[in-house]
Length: 369
Image (cartoon, rainbow, N blue to C red; front, top):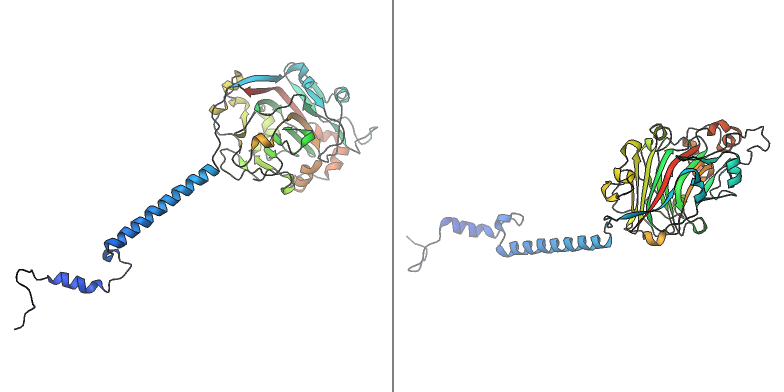
């Protein structure tokens, strides 16, 4: 009987080893049990390289689009607009409306004569005329009397606190509390703090309008709903990069609750807007030691990530006005629920503007020290 050849001193291979060796030549490539040490080393190397590349890309992107540093600043009160002399801090804009409104903005003497602006120790009011009807001479067939005031002081940054007690509303109205440089728009930017149209049922809108190269398609930390990302006034029919507040942040519901405080911080890191209800005003605002770092997320956040705030916004005045009809109103008229057409309401229905008035407390401007 013939036997396998085994040299003296050698141990014959076991059956299992022989069987495994014979099977290895036909082992499936996808079964990791049969991979050699070299294969495992290669796979490990690929994984390590992928991780390194992923981290490097993440770091690069993070450096390219970092969220700005909104660290605490110390603010000192600079300006206060309050009391019977409230409107002494403003110039009255007169002439045609740049936004093609159906309105006559009247100068200061006429505004006071018609009782369109007046102030007490506690509050200031700016309103639309309700006395001129279709049979008046002159009538409102070319536009209704209203007011637009612009602060004499201009600003390049700061923390702005606005006590707003009543917001205007009614079909055909377009009220706004905003900042801009009217002589250099949009080059020097526009910051809309409060804005609405018609019955203002959809709440407050906070918006930036700029020249080119200003986008908000980046990480933002805010509570309200972002609309457009591109702030460029030459795009999207000058929609700007807006943020929409809740229904209760303008108009009937807002006024019923006694209004509240609008706070806007404008710094190189970005522009942020908070809206505080009357019963939820931070104590540091009341004590005139405001600290935005303690207020939580803003209603609207416009970070400098992809928009150089220092370059896009400068030399801005505070503006308070009530426009009638105009570009924005015309753009939403069909969905406004208002009857007839805007110019007809403005010309012939003075009673429609009974609630078209701003009532504000004090305006304060703080600067970082």
